[in-house]
Amino acid sequence: MTLYDYSPLPERPRLDWPDGKRVAFYVGLNLEHFLPDQPSTSIWPLDLAPDPLNHGWREYGARVGVWRTVDILDRHGIRASALVNSMVAEHNPQIIKAGVERDWAWLAHGQTNSTLHTGYEPDEERRILADITTTIETATGQRPKGWMGPALTETHHTPELLAELGYSYVLDWTNDDQPYRLNVPGMLSVPYTVELNDLGLFLRGLTGPDFLQMVKDQYDVLRDEGGRVMALALHPFVIGQAFRAKYLDLALAYVAAQPDVWLTTSDAIADHYSAQ
Image 1 (spheres, helix red, strand yellow):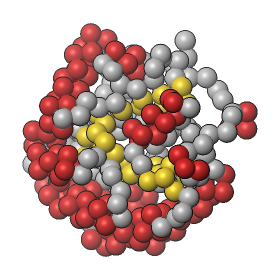
Image 2 (cartoon, helix red, strand yellow):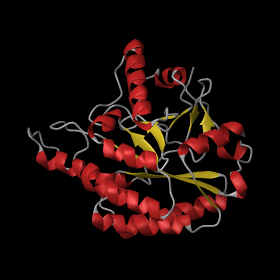
Image 3 (cartoon, rainbow, N blue to C red):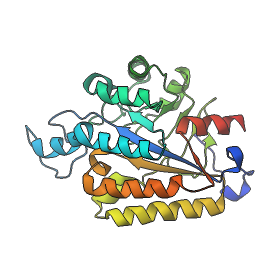
């Protein structure tokens, strides 16, 4: 059985959002814990121990960048869809507390982004997923409904094991502008993006003004098409740098001012699609 079926966009029924809105917009805020002296996400591929260069770059997000990002989200009335490593609950409880106070949606994002979610036998993976889920639920008071693996990784069994734990959707399959049903009972794929994603964009050399224009262009086209999801993927150690945060503020001001946008979360998108 394949995980999903091919569904060309023109052959689908019309998808409507609440109150006639044309674009469902959410911010996927990556809240990640990185283990020291592990390669992980790096700007310079050096085998160092200790590794203050790469680890310090990543750790900036938890110490500084996330707080700058939270202020900007608050300014524009946007609740994050928090993609959280379960280790954040132990190492950065102040971040969890800030998200709970703001009623963020909480999605499981593996244990740590220093380890890919691959290579597990089903029984081992079932145990790991249960531990991740319980840790996040205990820390946030909310059992996660959505999953995105570290670096968008899954095993062949991940969706069915997540369904056993009560999950209803994954973000890993970035192949659509609308949700769709997986061939796993009760499971959806909800759009995420590796394109409108600060980590990929800025590390390829794009600038803040480039980012702002891309957000505007993405929104404008999806609005004209209607019935689409616009995901904006953010990493506090990237977008939270002061010279970039300025352009996130401008980009969210543009989106939030649109009369035909539904500012929402990935949880609400999954629920609305399932109800339709």
